[in-house]
Length: 36
Image (cartoon, rainbow, N blue to C red; front, side, top):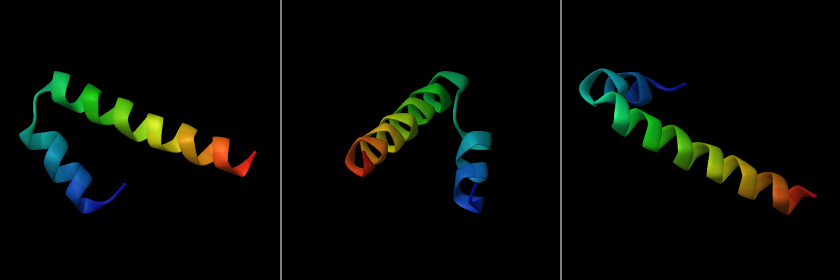
């Protein structure tokens, strides 16, 4: 987790944080699909 991520979590709402987590998870899944 980078410093920017920590700052953004403190300044954003819980719903926004959940959206960001979903986007990150989607990116990870795409990377996994490429590796397979």
